[in-house]
Image (cartoon, rainbow, N blue to C red):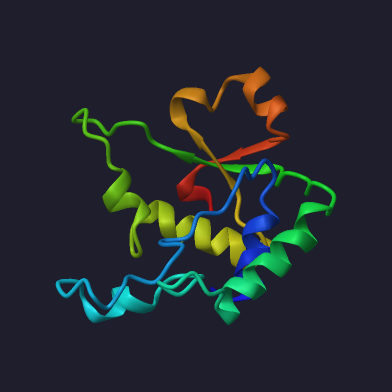
Length: 142
């Protein structure tokens, strides 16, 4: 993951943390893993810090003291359930889905992605105010 992507993630107001798939490379003595799994860690399987781990740590230290970012004032409405009572998140939120495409268009236009609010909460004035949301936008309007 590039430092730009980590900085972008850190620009999200209220972000609590960033997870990494695995902290350490998988030991080569474990023979049944896919090849890619042996080299994903921030540390080697012998606990040596790798260059990516060093950069990750440096960036974490830099960002730890940074001021909290302002929340994006717009939120995109995500349906809780569709007309059949089905949760449509996977289809709608994946690449090519209506919600995904609307979120990406907003992010390209504004430079940051909108917040996300469930339809069931989209009229909750106290929740919206607490999150700094001033405009609620429907997917079809983006």
